[in-house]
Length: 208
Ligand SMILES: O=C(O)c1ccccc1N[C@@H]1O[C@H](COP(=O)(O)O)[C@@H](O)[C@H]1O
Image (cartoon, rainbow, N blue to C red; front, side):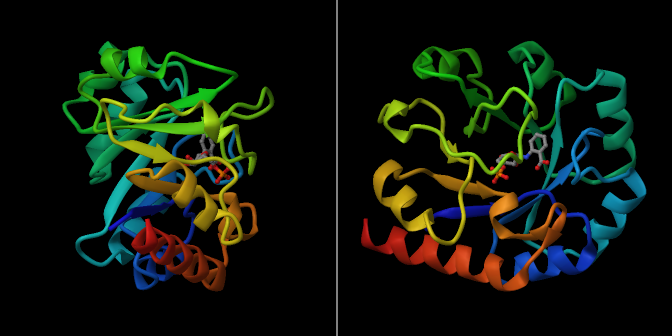
């Protein structure tokens, strides 16, 4: 079954909506420049609303290690997502499972990156945009993704209920990550869009 993460949750009710739709994970953005950024107190309130067996992911972008450690000390996150230019040694230094985001700025040697981030639980591929580190709603050229990557592939970038089935059929990723494509406004999720996204992804995955 394909896994789905709903990222950029800022409200407990959106976390509950993601879980009710069957999402496997929710993402909390600890990047102050994002319209989806949450404080530690907000994150804790969201996590308290989350039912069991839904993974909580903390997203950081080139954050000082002390700041990441400070969040981890107060917030029971299951998995870390590094979405900037973090080196493998940095990513592995927190004693927590992590996924590494790669922003696709043209063709990249993804095989080499999978080897470099060998202890990552997955490689997340996102679109590159100069103005923002993520959550842009932009897709990238999926034909740049090689088959048989050494790490589980999480596809992100501009996914929404209308294109997720095609993405699943073409890329066959391990998991999907979506943020702006299931929103009513930045940081405010739409429960019906989340429901449609998860249903369309799962239906498409059954057929491949
Ligand atoms: O969601 C954000 O605001 C964000 C900010 C900084 C880095 C990453 C961010 N989100 C991640 O961006 C991708 C794609 O988002 P979208 O679906 O295109 O809006 C996804 O991995 C989010 O986790």
